Structure formats: C-alpha cells, structure tokens
Length: 257
Length: 66
Image 1 (cartoon, rainbow over the protein chains, first blue to last red):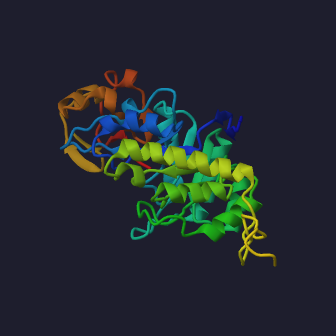
Image 2 (cartoon, rainbow over the protein chains, first blue to last red; image 1 turned 120 degrees about the vertical axis):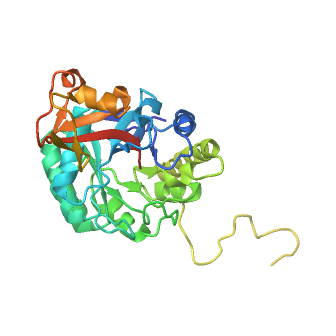
C-alpha cells in the first residue's frame, strides 16, 4: 500500500519524526533513528559551552534523513528567523521547525509570534513546520502564512502526558488542509497510535524515546505504533455503539426461543 | 582589544583571527558555527578575518533538540 506523506517537495514514507534531545549518549542516535524508521530528525542550535566540549549532533544523524533545526530559545519571531537563517547558512537544508516560547513553566508556544516567523521564512523559501498551541484560528493563519504543516502540541513539551489536546487536534485535522503533526507530549506508543487513528499526518517524538529504559527498543515500538495507527485510520474504524451488538449468533440450538 | 564572545566581553591580542580564537578556545572547527557581527561566517573566511575592537562573535553548535 503506497501511503506517502508529502511535505514541501519531499515525499516521506515514515510518519514518525524524531527529536534528538536528552539522549544519554549521542552514540545511541544512529541506532534509534534506524529502529524508529524516522526520516525527519530535529536538532537545535546553541551557544558553545567553552567549559564543556561537545560533539556536533548532526554527525550522528544518518545522511539520508532530513535534518530539521528547531528555533528553540527564540522568544519572538525575529529571533526565530535569525536562528533559521543561520542554520540554513550552516548547511542544514531548508526545513525548519518554528518554536517561539516565552512561558518557562509549561513551554507553551506563542502562536502570534510563530505566525509572524512562519510568514517571513516561508517567503524566503524555507519549508516551515510551526510548533503551536492547537487553535483553529491560529492554524488557519499559519496556512495563509505559508506553513508546510501545522504542529499542535499534545501536552507540554517533555511531559509524557499524552494527547491531552485531543479535541482541539481533531478539529484541526478536520478543518486544516495541511498535514497536522502532533508535536510534544506524546509519552507512550499507544498515544502515538491514538493520534494517528484520528487522522493526524505524523507525530514528532523525543522525550518518550530518549528517556526510555531502552531507547532503541522504544523507538521501534513507536515506529510500529505509528504505522498501526495510520493503517487503522486508512482502514476506517468501525462505529462506536452505546449498547452491545452481538458478534456471535445468539440464536443457537440450546433453546427454541 | 575588547570583543564580545557569546555575550561575554573578552580581551584578545591585536590581529587575532577567528580561526586563531577558535583554536585558542580548544574548539574543534568542524563542530562549530561562527556568527560574526550577526552574519554567518563561512569556515573558509576564518583565517583571513582579523578581529576588530567591539566585534561580536557567536560561536554556536548543533545539539540535540526536539
């Protein structure tokens, strides 16, 4: 069954996007990417800590993946635009995840600034995937701004609380013509499957895999769940009933009536 | 001579280049990105660029992120 997710000018067969934060060792990343099947992998750009020599994360991401820098750390549209331009100039390709956050406790995105950044970067030829609070009006404005997909949160970043915004995401799936990608909060493969069953185009998972006891096995579990959820969606789930409807014939041979 | 590196004031010697400063910091040039006065500076230009008073450098790196 051919089931392609088209974003920008790329055709993807995997609907699991992978974040690379919080892994106990970057050396796990190639194996995690492989186990998950992910074709889109996010990274962040940071000031170098002079006291602590680190590795360049990009070196651990398989070359056939789309590297998607995020703009984390940006507190307004202008800062997000600056990070995106730098990442592209540094050879990161033209995909970018917009992330504009001013709220330190829940890390909820600023939809207004996100829309502004999306408009500027889309006009510059970026493939823009904005992380947003699920809100229909904001999503429509992101469409108009030239976003390539819309990425509502399931619950706060890194919380593993699952798809708490389900109803709002459902509305986006129904009303927005762009791919809807649930980004943030997905904590268990079952929750990824749940999102996929609703018809979201993809999910982005980081913490749930990175902080699992066995990240490689968890990456595989998420890959399978995303595939299962997608297939269920395409198969058309059956109707939900209030009362029982027998699966076996109740008219047997034990009694006449 | 005074310049700003990653938001901190630093004193460096006259005529120091970006490449020289990266080496002085003990950084592997292949793992970092340099923004010079708000513009990305390509690696090929690092050894040609002598720093001037009040220059601003951001030395950045791709790290794990979601």
